[in-house]
Image: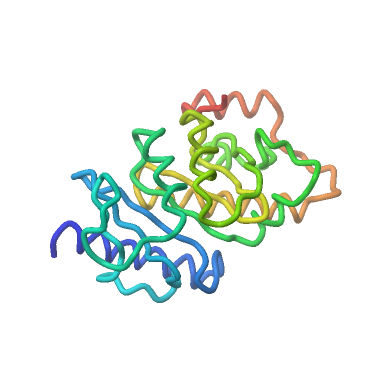
Length: 215
Protein backbone atom coordinates (compact mmCIF):
# COMPACT_ATOMS: atom_id res chain seq x y z
CA UNK A 1 0.00 0.00 0.00
CA UNK A 2 1.10 3.57 -0.55
CA UNK A 3 1.73 5.94 2.35
CA UNK A 4 -1.67 7.53 1.71
CA UNK A 5 -3.42 4.15 1.75
CA UNK A 6 -1.76 3.10 5.00
CA UNK A 7 -2.63 6.41 6.64
CA UNK A 8 -6.25 6.12 5.52
CA UNK A 9 -6.43 2.65 7.06
CA UNK A 10 -4.96 3.97 10.31
CA UNK A 11 -7.51 6.79 10.50
CA UNK A 12 -10.39 4.37 9.89
CA UNK A 13 -9.10 1.97 12.56
CA UNK A 14 -8.65 4.66 15.20
CA UNK A 15 -11.97 6.30 14.34
CA UNK A 16 -13.83 2.99 14.75
CA UNK A 17 -12.17 2.45 18.14
CA UNK A 18 -13.31 5.91 19.25
CA UNK A 19 -16.85 5.29 17.99
CA UNK A 20 -17.16 1.76 19.41
CA UNK A 21 -16.27 3.04 22.89
CA UNK A 22 -18.94 5.75 22.77
CA UNK A 23 -16.55 8.71 22.68
CA UNK A 24 -18.51 10.10 19.75
CA UNK A 25 -21.76 9.07 18.09
CA UNK A 26 -23.81 9.19 14.89
CA UNK A 27 -22.01 11.26 12.29
CA UNK A 28 -20.30 13.51 14.85
CA UNK A 29 -16.59 14.07 15.16
CA UNK A 30 -13.76 14.33 12.68
CA UNK A 31 -10.08 13.50 12.32
CA UNK A 32 -7.31 14.94 10.18
CA UNK A 33 -3.72 13.82 9.66
CA UNK A 34 -0.79 15.59 8.01
CA UNK A 35 1.39 13.43 5.78
CA UNK A 36 5.12 13.83 5.22
CA UNK A 37 4.56 15.63 1.91
CA UNK A 38 2.39 18.30 3.59
CA UNK A 39 -0.92 16.99 2.25
CA UNK A 40 -3.79 16.20 4.60
CA UNK A 41 -6.14 13.28 5.09
CA UNK A 42 -9.49 14.28 6.59
CA UNK A 43 -12.65 12.38 7.48
CA UNK A 44 -15.46 13.25 5.04
CA UNK A 45 -18.41 15.48 5.81
CA UNK A 46 -21.45 13.66 7.18
CA UNK A 47 -19.55 10.42 7.76
CA UNK A 48 -19.75 8.21 10.84
CA UNK A 49 -16.50 7.52 12.64
CA UNK A 50 -17.64 3.93 13.15
CA UNK A 51 -18.15 3.11 9.49
CA UNK A 52 -15.48 4.93 7.49
CA UNK A 53 -14.52 3.62 4.06
CA UNK A 54 -10.75 4.27 3.98
CA UNK A 55 -10.77 4.89 0.24
CA UNK A 56 -13.31 7.71 0.63
CA UNK A 57 -11.35 9.63 3.29
CA UNK A 58 -10.59 13.07 1.84
CA UNK A 59 -7.05 13.71 0.59
CA UNK A 60 -6.28 17.42 0.39
CA UNK A 61 -3.32 19.34 -0.96
CA UNK A 62 -1.43 21.67 1.34
CA UNK A 63 -3.59 24.51 0.02
CA UNK A 64 -6.87 22.66 0.61
CA UNK A 65 -7.57 21.35 -2.89
CA UNK A 66 -9.40 17.99 -2.95
CA UNK A 67 -7.07 15.41 -4.52
CA UNK A 68 -9.18 12.29 -3.96
CA UNK A 69 -11.95 10.91 -1.79
CA UNK A 70 -15.17 12.59 -0.66
CA UNK A 71 -15.57 16.21 0.38
CA UNK A 72 -13.93 16.90 3.77
CA UNK A 73 -15.60 17.79 7.06
CA UNK A 74 -17.05 21.27 7.31
CA UNK A 75 -14.80 21.77 10.34
CA UNK A 76 -11.68 22.08 8.15
CA UNK A 77 -11.07 25.72 9.25
CA UNK A 78 -10.73 24.43 12.82
CA UNK A 79 -8.21 21.75 11.83
CA UNK A 80 -6.28 24.09 9.54
CA UNK A 81 -5.80 26.59 12.37
CA UNK A 82 -3.91 24.04 14.46
CA UNK A 83 -1.64 23.06 11.58
CA UNK A 84 -0.93 26.71 10.86
CA UNK A 85 -0.14 27.73 14.43
CA UNK A 86 1.53 24.60 15.83
CA UNK A 87 4.30 23.39 13.52
CA UNK A 88 4.68 20.04 15.29
CA UNK A 89 1.02 19.08 14.72
CA UNK A 90 0.68 15.81 12.84
CA UNK A 91 -3.00 15.10 13.57
CA UNK A 92 -6.12 16.77 14.95
CA UNK A 93 -9.09 15.03 16.58
CA UNK A 94 -12.44 16.71 17.26
CA UNK A 95 -15.22 14.85 19.08
CA UNK A 96 -18.62 15.53 20.62
CA UNK A 97 -17.63 13.58 23.74
CA UNK A 98 -20.44 13.82 26.31
CA UNK A 99 -18.52 14.48 29.54
CA UNK A 100 -16.35 17.14 27.92
CA UNK A 101 -19.40 18.86 26.46
CA UNK A 102 -21.14 18.72 29.85
CA UNK A 103 -18.13 20.34 31.51
CA UNK A 104 -18.23 23.18 28.98
CA UNK A 105 -21.72 24.13 30.14
CA UNK A 106 -20.90 24.94 33.76
CA UNK A 107 -20.76 28.68 34.47
CA UNK A 108 -17.99 28.47 37.06
CA UNK A 109 -15.19 26.71 35.16
CA UNK A 110 -11.96 28.56 34.44
CA UNK A 111 -11.95 29.40 30.70
CA UNK A 112 -8.16 29.53 30.71
CA UNK A 113 -7.92 25.97 32.03
CA UNK A 114 -11.18 24.04 32.04
CA UNK A 115 -9.80 20.78 33.43
CA UNK A 116 -9.07 20.61 37.17
CA UNK A 117 -5.60 19.15 38.00
CA UNK A 118 -6.82 15.71 39.05
CA UNK A 119 -4.18 13.42 37.52
CA UNK A 120 -0.59 13.69 36.33
CA UNK A 121 -1.49 12.38 32.89
CA UNK A 122 -4.12 15.02 32.31
CA UNK A 123 -1.41 17.63 32.77
CA UNK A 124 1.27 15.72 30.85
CA UNK A 125 -0.80 14.99 27.75
CA UNK A 126 -2.89 18.15 27.52
CA UNK A 127 -1.31 21.07 29.34
CA UNK A 128 -3.95 23.75 29.93
CA UNK A 129 -7.18 23.32 27.96
CA UNK A 130 -8.75 26.58 26.77
CA UNK A 131 -12.52 27.06 26.70
CA UNK A 132 -13.68 28.75 23.50
CA UNK A 133 -17.16 30.25 23.09
CA UNK A 134 -20.00 28.70 21.13
CA UNK A 135 -19.80 28.84 17.35
CA UNK A 136 -22.24 27.49 14.79
CA UNK A 137 -20.70 24.24 13.44
CA UNK A 138 -18.53 24.93 10.43
CA UNK A 139 -18.13 28.62 11.23
CA UNK A 140 -14.64 29.75 10.09
CA UNK A 141 -14.56 31.91 13.22
CA UNK A 142 -13.64 28.76 15.16
CA UNK A 143 -10.38 28.66 13.25
CA UNK A 144 -9.79 32.33 13.96
CA UNK A 145 -10.33 31.71 17.68
CA UNK A 146 -7.68 28.97 17.63
CA UNK A 147 -5.28 31.23 15.71
CA UNK A 148 -5.85 33.86 18.40
CA UNK A 149 -4.18 31.49 20.88
CA UNK A 150 -0.96 31.81 18.82
CA UNK A 151 -0.12 28.12 19.13
CA UNK A 152 -0.04 28.15 22.93
CA UNK A 153 -2.63 25.39 23.44
CA UNK A 154 -2.72 21.88 21.99
CA UNK A 155 -6.28 21.34 23.20
CA UNK A 156 -9.42 23.45 23.34
CA UNK A 157 -13.00 22.85 24.40
CA UNK A 158 -15.71 24.42 22.25
CA UNK A 159 -18.63 25.46 24.46
CA UNK A 160 -21.81 23.45 23.83
CA UNK A 161 -19.97 21.50 21.13
CA UNK A 162 -16.92 19.44 22.06
CA UNK A 163 -13.16 19.09 22.50
CA UNK A 164 -10.42 19.47 19.86
CA UNK A 165 -6.91 18.10 20.38
CA UNK A 166 -3.77 18.40 18.26
CA UNK A 167 -0.91 15.92 18.60
CA UNK A 168 2.44 15.09 17.04
CA UNK A 169 0.83 12.11 15.29
CA UNK A 170 -2.53 10.36 15.16
CA UNK A 171 -1.95 8.10 18.14
CA UNK A 172 -0.79 10.99 20.32
CA UNK A 173 -3.83 13.08 19.38
CA UNK A 174 -6.26 10.23 20.04
CA UNK A 175 -4.66 9.30 23.38
CA UNK A 176 -4.68 12.91 24.52
CA UNK A 177 -8.34 13.21 23.51
CA UNK A 178 -9.15 10.12 25.55
CA UNK A 179 -7.34 11.64 28.53
CA UNK A 180 -9.34 14.87 28.15
CA UNK A 181 -12.65 13.03 28.14
CA UNK A 182 -11.61 10.83 31.09
CA UNK A 183 -10.56 13.88 33.11
CA UNK A 184 -13.82 15.64 32.28
CA UNK A 185 -15.70 12.58 33.49
CA UNK A 186 -13.72 12.56 36.73
CA UNK A 187 -14.44 16.26 37.20
CA UNK A 188 -18.17 15.63 36.86
CA UNK A 189 -18.10 12.61 39.19
CA UNK A 190 -16.29 14.67 41.83
CA UNK A 191 -18.39 17.81 41.44
CA UNK A 192 -19.54 19.03 44.84
CA UNK A 193 -16.87 16.96 46.61
CA UNK A 194 -13.81 18.48 48.27
CA UNK A 195 -11.52 16.22 46.26
CA UNK A 196 -7.75 16.18 46.79
CA UNK A 197 -6.64 17.62 43.46
CA UNK A 198 -2.94 18.04 42.72
CA UNK A 199 -1.50 21.06 44.50
CA UNK A 200 0.65 23.82 43.00
CA UNK A 201 3.93 22.15 43.96
CA UNK A 202 2.88 18.78 42.53
CA UNK A 203 1.78 20.44 39.29
CA UNK A 204 5.12 22.25 39.06
CA UNK A 205 7.00 18.96 39.49
CA UNK A 206 5.04 17.37 36.63
CA UNK A 207 5.44 20.40 34.39
CA UNK A 208 9.20 20.50 34.97
CA UNK A 209 9.87 16.79 34.68
CA UNK A 210 7.85 16.27 31.50
CA UNK A 211 8.52 19.68 29.92
CA UNK A 212 4.83 20.62 29.76
CA UNK A 213 3.81 23.97 28.32
CA UNK A 214 1.84 25.39 31.25
CA UNK A 215 1.46 28.99 30.09
